[in-house]
Image 1: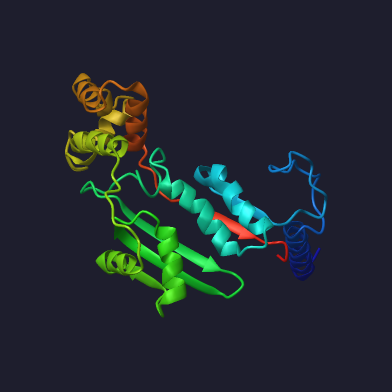
Image 2: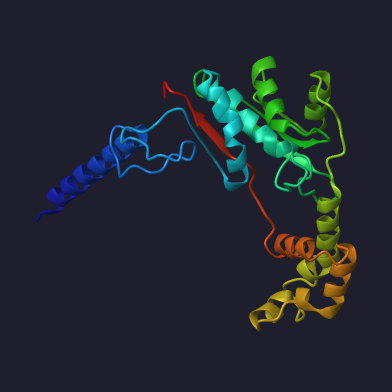
Amino acid sequence: MSLWSRRKFFLASLAGTAAAGTTNLLGASGPAPQPDPWSGQAAAGKGKRPVMISSANGVRALEKGMDILKGGGDTLDAAVAAVTVVEDDPNDDSVGYGGLPNEEGEVELDASVMHGPTRRAGSVASVRRIKNVAKLAKAVMERTNHVMIVGDGARRFAVAQGFEEMNLLTEHSRKIWLAWKASSSFNWRPGIDSPEWNGKAASRGKSPLDSEEFRAELARICGNDEVLMARALEVIEAPPTGTINCLAVNERG
């Protein structure tokens, strides 16, 4: 086979694969029907709308958004409603009230929204003392000529728009932060140029976090709560990144 015909074959195959993937995404055809998480029944091959998807921390809140979509509501309203459930939950330390704080012990939040039907967007970043930043990002989109407002300017804008200021740090997240601070000498010092650098101990299968001294301090901070201690260690050893992602498609696509 010549080089040119191989190229043509590859491009034709790639185009066919992309077209098939697009067709499946839009619901015209696809693999065997999967159970519908809302009805428990297998969906038809064409696919069902409206549809919402979320990162793991938002799945439990999707029903709130689906109620809006099924009632003919706006897609962005549905997505924000679902995210707000998670932001309001003090037992979820990923976003909003009870979110894990920054180095200073302040919960600092970002959010962005995009509205497919109008091709508009709004966002906020480094916002403190405002719980529902998804709603705030939507307010930026709808009520300003900006796409992003950050820091204290975003907080002042929120207050002017009627958002309540509050302390977002829960006792759960405060204790995890204190445990992280207690571990920071292990994580940050000494530097990589030092013979005492943590990586050398870690490469031998040992972790400074397993020391009796640190474990005793962790137990003291967490009040011997084993569940909280386990979560604190999880955060220390693999600091979480990311946020909550939520997308919605209405019956019109």
